[in-house]
Image (cartoon, rainbow, N blue to C red; front, side, top):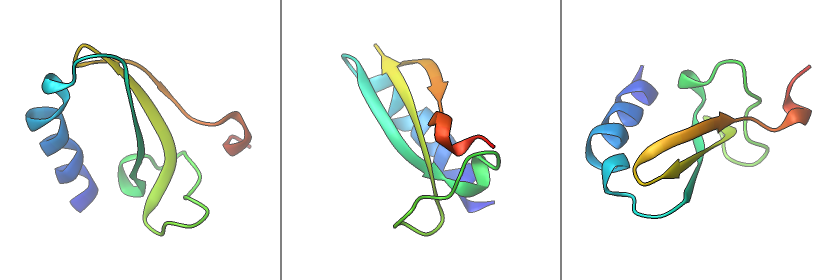
Length: 67
């Protein structure tokens, strides 16, 4: 799964370097199978995570994407 590799690289190389509150959005669809695909970007899920000081605060998915 190439999306899993991207997510692991992000966690290892980028997440710990985030300073303040930062929203990371549009995750690879293969790492978020229960979320809806992005409306305009193929292969991407409409999902976002809030990172505060390098730690994920809570993963969120839009309520309209849950059926």
